[in-house]
Image (cartoon, rainbow, N blue to C red; front, side):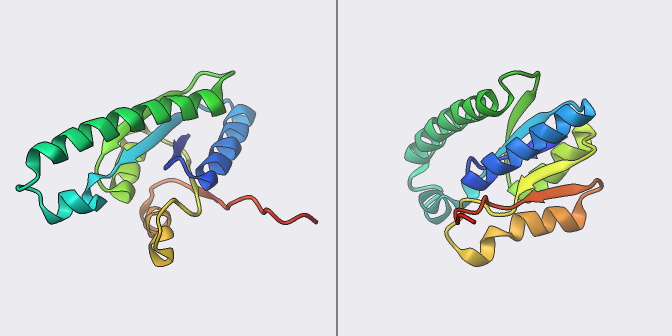
Length: 147
């Protein structure tokens, strides 16, 4: 079972649901985070002019993302064995590729990410649902309303 995360609240919900399912079926788990530098404005706008600054920023962000992924796995899989991996690239393409290469029988992903533009929030999920070679479980945000 591949559980994709962008560290959003919705990813927390997806991870919790994914671990429940993995435990119920005795499935192996791979937590995956895709580090997408293509959307960083300074890198996109000035790739050559700010090359040294860009590389330092990317290296720092990569270290923080790796630490966040390790913490995410500890939070959600503290009592079980689970693998984790961070890759660089476009999120939908990398999630699909990693699911294929790892042999995932299910992809678990939150229905909304941390993006700021509403129209783009579900684009990764929609691409994965349309193109995956295995079932995809999309997990919505938990309702904050009582009742």
